[in-house]
Length: 146
Image (tube, rainbow, N blue to C red):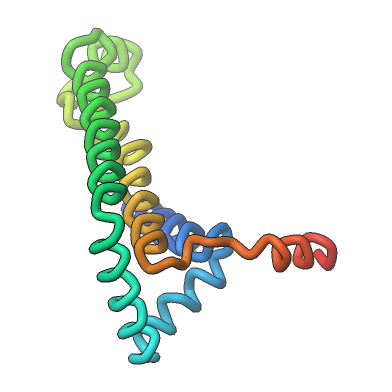
């Protein structure tokens, strides 16, 4: 049951990011991707042109992302394996005596690295397909009417 909750949260996070803070818009973008071949072709063209012209920016963004996730992973590994956190959790009967450091590793990764990766991937795809630009006039109209 917990896995269903976690995966549902990841899916909602993905749609929320894809829709630029609107789950419904994110879902509509997925539907359009699979139902309209013209949109798919245009997205590929836009992405290829963007990657050819802005490859240095893309490389820099991916490099920074990799460095950040490497640091986060090392901090998680340190907290799980090099501190007394696991021992203390066992001592306080918060987790089972038979639990290994994997419990902590996976717990912290589920809270940090995995959502960060999902969000990075979605924002990256929106960026290279030129869909990241938010129309501020529409946002103001939405705020005024809502």
